[in-house]
Length: 54
Image (tube, rainbow, N blue to C red; front, side):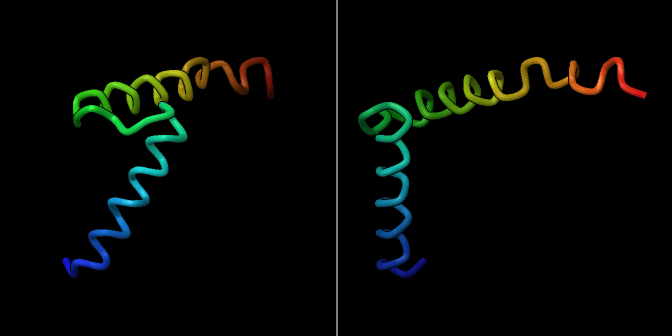
């Protein structure tokens, strides 16, 4: 990957991490934990939609 593209990806990651946690993640484990937490919240109750509809 070209250096300028890698740098752009790293900067994008930093901005998004600060949106989610107010700081950079400490490591990949912390990042994955947060992503799974968000996914769980997002999908919780998704099976409830549409019940009672015909």
